[in-house]
Length: 406
Image (cartoon, rainbow, N blue to C red; front, top):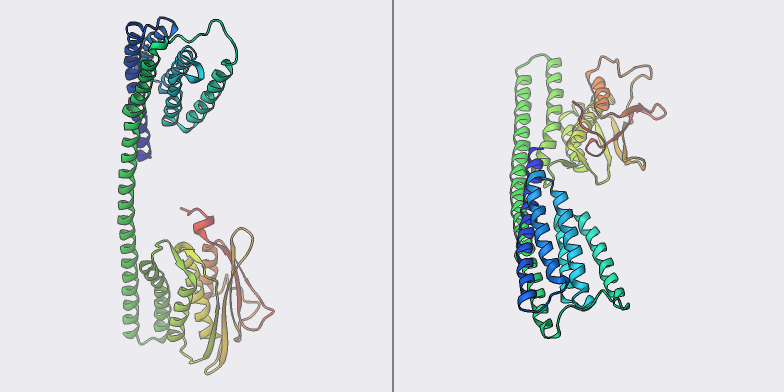
């Protein structure tokens, strides 16, 4: 919020400085133009008086702004003065053929420098004024005549062009270049910060992976020093859970995308590891993995990975007897509504009783499956119509559809 506030204040200061500079410079040039018209170009009609009045009211507008401090009011007043003055000078200096009509385009540019909305408004107003000036040329209006003597027209044209070009180049041109330089500098700084943050985030994933692998090694070491088979089995289960998380951080560290993981290669690597570490009965199991090429956020991938870890481990431990032959299926389908996914994990083993409520079961693995499904804010169902154990989990990718909970 502080950065946004500072940026807004900086832009407001730049616009204020630009508008005040425009008011002062245009007022001074208008006074000089008025003297040029009277003493050198022999122009004594409304034109020089409009230049004088514009200078006076514009300077007053700038002085009043020092008291009220309302930039919008000053900008609108300056625009109104500029439009009226340019319109009057244009119709009294040749109408649609007047070189001073070029100043109207500068007013449009000034609007766009202020805001895009004002730029559009000024654009349409100026277009209507130009059309009005053109239409007025078809009518013989007695009170509107070209006030520029024929011998002074070239000098008036030269002065008008110099007046417009100086305002355009010295004020708006320089401001646009400064703005472009600031944007380029800000872009470079942001790009450098993004690179630094990506490097830091990559390092965080690398360190988390190393720490998880260290924990896994400690669990493995501890199991070797235990004579209790139940303790060994428990430590081994914890080790596989830790490594399933470490794999995600390793893949994030190695890939360009630091927030999403390519889910299919992750599941393939996880199942490959489980078949080596958890298949203590030497069951001849084939694993069918049918997952589309999708990227999932880390907050979704980790619970899913742990869930797959528990389901596959339970199948290898309890679903088959020694030297059995079987198949485990891991299928992920993308539904059409609201970016929903359905993950199906099934085996053709012995399964477990229909009456067993895995939400209240004593098995840590079954409880974890239920709790992980809740963590995904998903629904989990068992399909009893098929042989073995069959889970169906419907979920959404948290990175896309859910805000993190506190």
